[in-house]
Image (cartoon, rainbow, N blue to C red; front, side, top):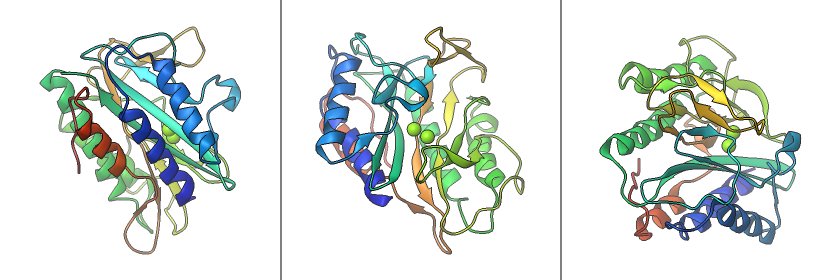
Length: 256
Ligand code: MG
Ligand code: MG
């Protein structure tokens, strides 16, 4: 599983190194798909319940499940790239939000707080804790502390031989509630955080989820194995963050 999860990070890094204003989101999708196949894996999302592409690319006010297409990246855009790979019988699934050119301090804060909340959630991914402990840590930081909207309709999930397994891992909830965490479980923890209201709407394409107020949304996702000791993060942002720092067309890089 770790191999599948690490390959997702490498596919992200390959994409991060080519991002610039003027390239289309379909070019990003095609590069990622080729990278995955060249590495002996298949894209988990393609044809998943009919999803037509290898990646989800969700621009600005799109929360998740956006379609890649002819849209050209423009200075000031942010977008979440979500990648899944299937290798050796297991899935890896990781999302990262990129900023093109210069973006406002307000947007940078949304990205920073969302990423921080992911790691706060991960810190609770311990044997004996419950799903609600992860959910509560994310909600406290994003909604209570910063006043952002935590999307209710979309949640993280278990991960393994299937892309989506039990338990569901919401980004809101009460401490001490929900499924008990056991060593060996792998969870995809993925805060989806809106700058404005928590409410979302669905586009007619049947997939794309947008913020109701059309303010931007951020999304970061790691795959985490519960152990008898520290949480083991199977996916990695290391190469993504390195590629992000090297690429002068990307304005934001924040490492935790
Ligand atoms: Mg994902
Ligand atoms: Mg996921």
